[in-house]
Structures are given as C-alpha cells and as structure tokens.
Image 1 (cartoon, rainbow, N blue to C red):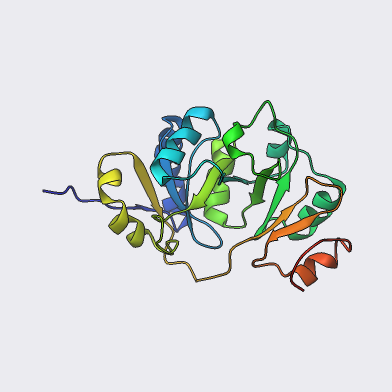
Image 2 (image 1 turned 180 degrees about the horizontal axis):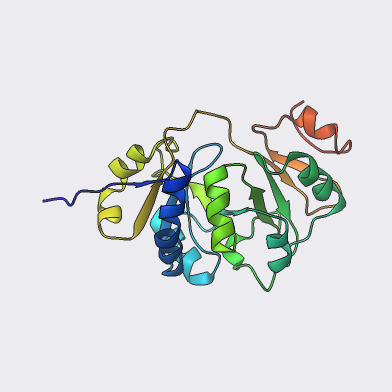
Length: 224
C-alpha cells in the first residue's frame, strides 16, 4: 500500500513560518526540496558538493547542464565570491528581484564545479517569489534550482503535479514539497551571460531583450 503523501502548505504567513524549521532541517540533511518560484515549481537544495550530487542523481541531470542559484540578497553573492560586472550590476539594480538570471564570474573556491556552466560562470537569480525569498533568507544561504519535472514532462505549476510524479520519493523522505498554490503559466527567466566583456542573452525569456538594452546598450542578443 502506497503511503499517503501531502505537500506542506506554503501560502499564508502562518503557513510559511510553520514550514520553515522543518524545511531548513531538510536542506541540512542534503535532501531535495520542491518549492514555488515566480515562474514554475523548482527542485533544489543546499549549495555544497553532497547536496548538488544528490540533486543531480534525483533529477537525472546530464553533467553539461548545471543548475542555477536562487538568492534573497546581494550579500549572498559576496559570500560565494561571485562578482557583479558593471553590466551585471546595472541589470541587477533594475530587474532584481525578478525573472532575470545572470551568469556571473567567480566562485571558484566556494561553489561546486558542477554548477559552472559552459560559459564559465555561475547562473544566479534573485527570486521575487515572496515565500521562497523568506525561506532563503531564513536559511541564510542560496539554494540551487532546476525545474520540477521528469525528463520530457513540462515543468510543474502545482504541488499536486509533483506529488503525482514523485510520490515514492516524497513518501520515502527524499523529497519535501512546499505547496504555494497553482502558479500562473509564464515565460522562463531571461538568462544573460555576464562573464565576458560584452554581456549576451543566452536564453530569451520573461524580460525582453529590448527592455534589457535600455539598461545595457551593447547587449548581444539574437532577438529584438
């Protein structure tokens, strides 16, 4: 008989506060967390070698597709020795918190190499999702992020979808699911590589390139 699996309510202020201690304890045991963001539900965990390896195994992620980091403040970049270039600093000042992911240089001694992308940097986003921001701030460190879905399936927009696809993992304690309600379908975050002298859009998304160019005029992109 399959054990009943219920996601942890993560909507109201009271629910969020009640969920924080158990969720932080779960992260500290190097296990995987499912949580809402401003776009879709994500899978993630702590930013250490053991946690990253567990997320890679859990998601079945190929080695050439790193995860990004979610932060709740620029102070978290400094602790990981990640650097805001002039272009990245201008974009962050305008669009963070928001659906903009910046690939930043640095972090060689603080971030596991599995999180480094082909551009040579670490992808970071300051999420505007209020509940997840509160979690990250309470935890005190960034968390990793990748879409909550099995290969070939669309990213989850509700906790119920995650329960349906990952029931045994949740029942066995490998996965903790935070239920922030059904999310409105939206475009993924725009990803801008800021590791080179001239920033470049490497994934179009929620923030249009034309809007980004209002802040960084020499931005390289294939779409308007």
